[in-house]
Amino acid sequence: MDEPEPAEGWPDRPLSEAEAKARFTEEEAVVAVWVMDHTTDIRSVAVPSGAPDDAVVDVVVETDTGFDMYSFTRGQWMDYGTQRKDDTESPSMAGTLESYRVLAGESESF
Image 1 (tube, rainbow, N blue to C red):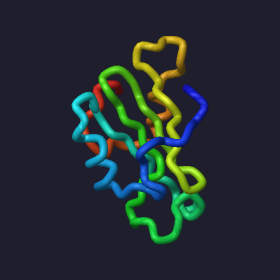
Image 2 (cartoon, helix red, strand yellow):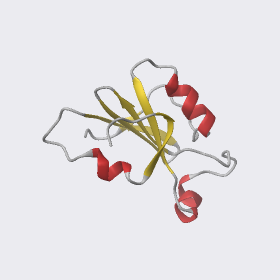
Image 3 (cartoon, rainbow, N blue to C red):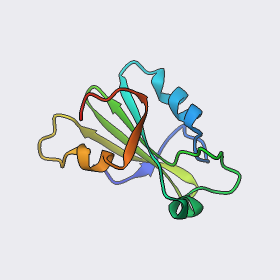
């Protein structure tokens, strides 16, 4: 994975679940959109006041070829890059995605 960089074209706030679905399900290459459900303690730090109750702050977009990872950190969305599915040198995404759930689409990876 790459060093995170600010994600271009993302809002300066967490997404609602509906926004996360709409943002990615319209793209042809998207297989699934994964989101992490944080504990109350983590949400109290990561989610700013005034955010929707269903605020999304961690997103993995699964495409036919890889996993694009994004996280809302310190008031902005960060792009953590893409882990390609055919990259045998990288650790499996299965361990990472154990703490995520599919919000939209259907993953065929696990």
